[in-house]
Length: 125
Ligand SMILES: [Zn+2]
Image (tube, rainbow, N blue to C red):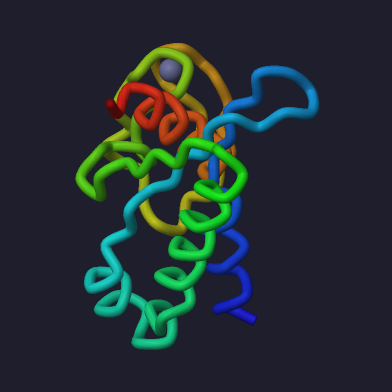
């Protein structure tokens, strides 16, 4: 159950940029620190599932002429407010939602991170 939730969170962190309602041109993903995740949550989280998922995604993007952008693991994607950039340094792993003290925006942790990943991915050359 816990592992399933983590997989869902990983999938939610996929960010897509759409040029229109149907066409997806670019997919941005976060390069996860699997060693760090393994230390925090145990071996199962790393397995090879995410690595294999990324490899399949790369293959599919090449096959269908899509762009895959990978954001570095040290890029701040979770803590910055996606509306104003305020860095929420008090955010903990258990905080699934939070409100930006600077701008007042209410964020779902994963959606906020996905927006930040997308922005960082677009900036990757
Ligand atoms: Zn904010």
